[in-house]
Image (cartoon, rainbow, N blue to C red; front, side, top):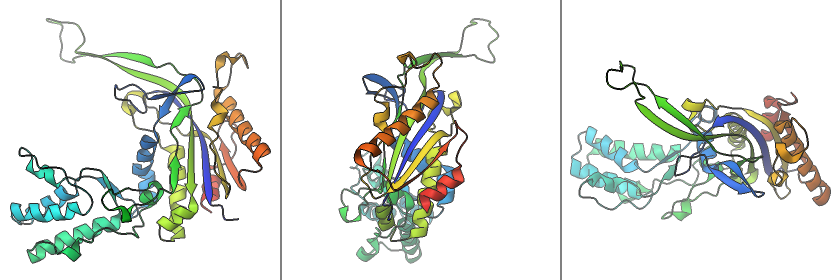
Length: 359
């Protein structure tokens, strides 16, 4: 039993919030099953998990950095060490160019030419190689040689790069295929975006001329019970990490715990919408993965006549488990083993779930 795939099905309830905003500052939505749902993009979820204190601490020394400003950082270090601005610029440009195409020159912002056009995800070992090269250039007061600019690494052992992948358009040999697929989280029920009208008062206003508010604004919000789906290819993760099984186990456990505990940060100060998952189903096996989102094509809806006081969490769990069972009945077992935590029923434990996914 190789357990190539690990699948996570998660239900998380958020109170009124604006977790993930669109270009107009409104909560993101998607239409599914003919009705509007709240949505949190996979990009938002992955960034919050990857940058969370929980994930960073669990994988300390094995988390990469996404940035465009490698060249600017190198330039600042060189100038601070006494290297002339012209040499510092040329040397830093050579270093930054290793990781991708650079921005075109701007006469008003000459240092902009040191910025990489697209975000590049570098591993700790690659950052260390950059730092060591800059130290050498400073100590020897010279520019980089061609051989010294071989800064990219195949065996990077960065857990977040191994999980979520990276693409270097000009250095495709160093691309990494993501071992983890993350779906956009969607609410299991219909939603209507509401508006919060708010004002701010000037504390020093003594109503001499104006007794009105100093600021008036509004922001969109909605509450939702979200279904999230994650699929991890354990074999690919191991390959991406150079066969380091211990690190792969830690990465799987850290990602799982972050997915259950870490909330998107959108408008947190205004809504305090932090939440833990209410339910999680983990599955392992070699079978072709499948999402259970079809459980919610028919939205969980108070108006469906199921109950005068419908328990959305309980109904969502029942719908998800029924969808799982129906898939198993029609296609055969879709996994070899499974484990779950159910906060609504008070069953299971996080420790047992993390042991299950990482063993």
